Amino acid sequence: MASTAPLHPVARQALTAALDEGWADPARLYRSGRQARMLLDAARETVAAVLGARADEISFTASGTQAVQLGLLGALAGNRRRGAHLVHSAVEHSSVLHVAERHEAGGGEVSVAPVDRAGRVDPAAFGALLRTDTALAALQSANHEVGTVQPVGEVAALCAGAGVPLLVDAAQSAGRVDVPTGWSLLTASAHKWGGPPGVGVLALRKGVRYASPLPADEREGGRVPGYVNVPAIVAAAASLRAVRAEAERENARLHALVERIRGRVPQLVPEVEVVGDPVRRLPHIVTFSCLYVDGEVLLTELDRAGFAVSSGSSCTSSTLTPSHVLAAMGVLTEGNVRVSLPYGTAEADVERFLAVLPDLVAGVRAPLGLDLPAPVGAAETTPRAEGRAGAERDERQATDTGGSAGAKSVGAGSERPEASGGVTVVDALGKRCPLPVIELAKRIGEVPVGGTIAVLSDDEAARLDVPAWCGMRGQEYAGEAPAADYGGDRGSAYLVLRRS
Image (tube, rainbow, N blue to C red; front, side, top):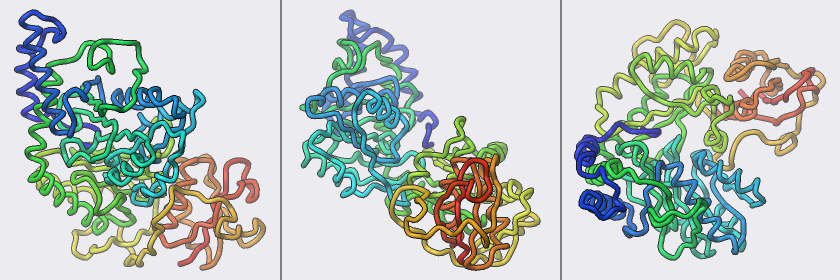
């Protein structure tokens, strides 16, 4: 799956064997140590061959996150004479964002490249952020939440032209698809491809300046201190080789199953948006957002039905903050479901998922009393739970394709309606995900076409989800104003013009 994958059978076999044969310290010269060293060297050669690197460019870490952190910090330190400027995309894994925060807190500078509504970086926009003092750039190979594949090759060419090393986080793609070219540093995580957890990979091209951010240690080329887990590394390498051998056939099969989900979910469930690039994407990930649904509740219902899916919804986060990936894309952050298919997923499992999803979503929405339109193709499906059917859905207006997330400031493209008279006010203060948007949906019918509705909210997610709702429902988002302008005592007013 996207967060982790079941242990591959080859990994299990290799791990069991290596526990007996590779238990010793590979740095020692006695027989068992030399045997462990041979296993470690063979594993390093295997990983290097799959990733398109030399064996001496590969270091093993304790996780993919550690590989990213060591790679970023080491490259920034190694290039400090050039400058202290870091560039990364808005949809990087949190491990990149946390290093960027630390770098900025320490006096460095950080520039963030936006993405379009599909979650993809524009190479020209990324390249425009590179400067003479840029020490490092970072770009993931593919996104971990929506599966969009990034234009790494194009960005790498721009970085090379500017003399800037590029770190590529290949955690989601390594083992599944070809490794992108042009990288200076590359990171990966074994448990993503069916290896055991606790093994990450940091690849560093010869000639790339790097200074370990940790105290010196002779192991792993001086880049990763501490004792290496030889059995786990051997299992990781064996499973990587196995999944690459299976990739062409299995990717085609999983791609077809994901296409089925992408096509059928909007037909079966009303008010759903499938997000991520429909073409340039990983073969095993599909993500969709359901309006008027608490993501945590839906995930719990799916879990009870036997489906382990995940979410980037704000209401499933312990911090109650929206997914930074969905926010950067400008899509709905509530009711988000990410389905990732591990190797060997059966067609019957996908069909059962599609069979149970409509009624589970209907059950979560039922208490809201919303008059929802019927999904596309509803006549071809079995009857839904009471209250789900409605009038045929109007064609949705096309949403914008550019820019990063969410709310624009008042006056940026639309005049703010006057606070006095003619504005319907919806007080959603104190209400959390996804209640502000639900209240908006309930009240929009009271507003005449051309009229304005102001949603008062102190939930940060509303700044993202109200504009996203407008895009899905063919309404116009008119900007943000202080809630005090509309009688609120805190928060903001999100203004919507009814267009249909």
